[in-house]
Image 1 (cartoon, helix red, strand yellow):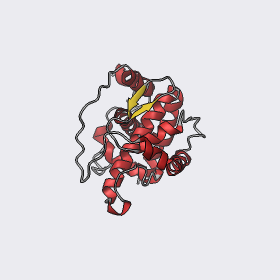
Image 2 (image 1 turned 180 degrees about the vertical axis):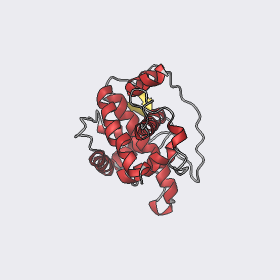
Image 3 (image 1 turned 90 degrees about the vertical axis):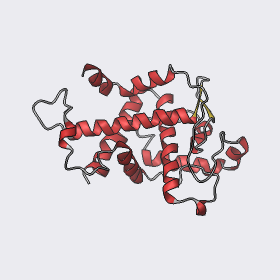
Length: 226
């Protein structure tokens, strides 16, 4: 219980420290889809798509209100690599370290899931037996919720519709041949990667506040209470 309380107080720092100290060797990742996704984004594609990619990032920055929450983009050219759902593209950080977009995707996904759990804990603090303002027995109070609202992946997916990262991901297939559900799936992966990049290139307390305000608090209104 003590460990869980501590993780709720400083979740971003804990996740990033764990992520940064872990070895991330290349590994084989099986992507089940109707088309082969390349292992790495080609430099010529980054040049060709530069203007459109910057526009996509600018759109997302506005919707997430990054400037309002003091989130800085360390390097937009590196950030645009997050738009490509490849396996081993290396994204360089200001300190010289680089990570594959796959591993930043995993970090971002974990941080987003953590915000869903934080929202559950906040939403269901209703009894005198709450611990530090949280009700750790919230699962017993979710019976009236739909299965979708009890599933963190579904909650994040539905919340993203309000953030509107439409066609965020760059897929090497003509737009008119990509089913909406496939595009949405890759948009989610690119969004996860961007969150991972933001988390590891900004101060922990700034990221903590940003995720709480933009994800945890808002998804209660956009998803859980609807």
